[in-house]
Image (spheres, rainbow, N blue to C red):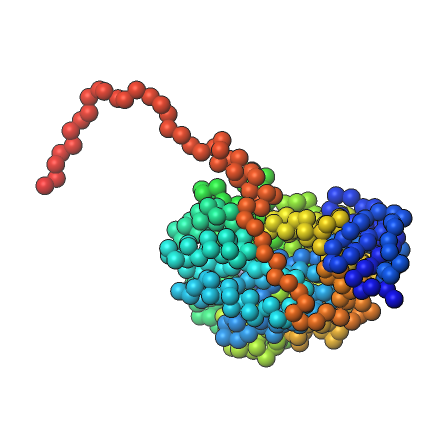
Length: 500
Ligand code: URP
Ligand code: ZN
Ligand code: ZN
Ligand code: ZN
C-alpha cells in the first residue's frame, strides 16, 4: 500500500527559475527530499508518471482579497472556495490583505483576519497589512506585526479618498517605518484627489455607466502616483512594491525607476495581462461592470501585450491577481452610478494559464521566466525563499504537474470560483495544471480539488528579505550624506533689522 506521505514524480521536466532538467522528484512528509534521476526510494511510495509534462514550483499569488468587505458588500470567494480555485489553477500559496478601517487597530484587524482564514484555507497563505491611517500607535503596531506576527509587507493606498487614502507626509512616515523595521512598502498608486474630482465631472456630464470609471482615472492618474510613491520611497531609502500595475504609463515609470537604480518592484495582475478596458464600453451594462476594478483596465488594446513584454524582460517582477470577486447582483449596486460599483475582478484560478498562454505560448518568455514571475520572485521578494518557489531538497513540496500542450477554455460554467462570471470567458489557454501538490499532498487531480478547509497553513515571514534589503543596507552605509568639514566663517555678517 503506497503511503500518502511519500510521492515519487517520475520523468518530468523539472523547471526552476534558473534551469530545467529531466528527472524525478521524491517527496516525504511535505518536503522535497531529492531531485534527480534513478533515486533509491522506499517501496511504499506513490509514483506519478510525469513524462512529457513539466514539474513546476506551485504558483504564488501575491495579491488576493478573499471575502473582503468592500464598498458596502462582501467578496463572494471566501478563503475556502478561493483557495480551492487557486489549487485547481496550479497556485499553492496566496498572499491576502488585512485592511483595517481608518482609526482601527492593525493588530486586532490582523487577529480577526487570521481567525477568518485559518479554518478555511485549503492552501498555504500569508498576509500583507494595510496602513490606512497614521499615528504613533500605528507605527508601534507595525513593529509588533513584524517582530511577532510574521508580517513583512504593508500596503498604503494613494486612492479611495476619505476611506483608505494616505497623504504624502503620511506615506513618508509609513515608508520610513517600513525601512526601519525591514518591511516592504507596497502602494496602490492612483491620485485619489484627481479621481474624486474626475468622478464628479463624469457624473455631471451624465456619464453614469462603467466607462465613467476609466474616464475619471486615466493612465496619467496612475502614472503620477506611481512616480510620487517612488520619489517618496527613494527619499527615505525604502524599497517599494507597486501593486496592480495596470497601464503602459505606470509600467514605464516603474521600468524607468528600476533602470535608474531604484529598489522598486512592479506587479502586473492576470486581468491586466489577459484582457483590457475596452469592455467598459460594452452595450450590456452587466458585461461592462464585471471588469470594474481599481486602477482600471485600460482601453488601449496594446496594454496587455506591453505589460507582458515588460514582465518578460524584468522591468516588471512578479504577478498576482487582485482576486476580489463580486457577482453581478453586487456589481448592480452601481447600476445608476459607476462610483458605487464594487471594485474587483477574478483571477486566482486562471493566472497561471493566462500567463502561460500570453507569455510562454506566445514566445515572449521561456518556462524558467514563467516560474520566476509566477512563483520564485514572489518567494524572494516576500522572504519565503527557498522554502517556497523552488524545487530542491529541503523546500516545501508545493508543485504543479503542468501539461504545456493541452488546452482548456476558461469559463464561469466550469471554474471553481463562487463568482457568476469570468472576465476571461472563452479564452483558450495552452498550459493546463494536471496535478497540484501542496506540502506533499495531492490536492488537485482529475479535475477535482481534494484539499479540505483548514489544511493550508499561515506562513510567517521574517523582515529584511535579502533580495530586497541587501542593496538598501549597502546604500545606507556608503550613501548617507555627510557635512563638508571646513573652517568656520569668521568674516563680517550683516545685521538684520529688528521688526518689533
Ligand atoms: O479593485 C480593486 N483593486 N479591488 C480591491 C482593492 C484594491 O485596491 O486592491
Ligand atoms: Zn489596490
Ligand atoms: Zn466585452
Ligand atoms: Zn488589491
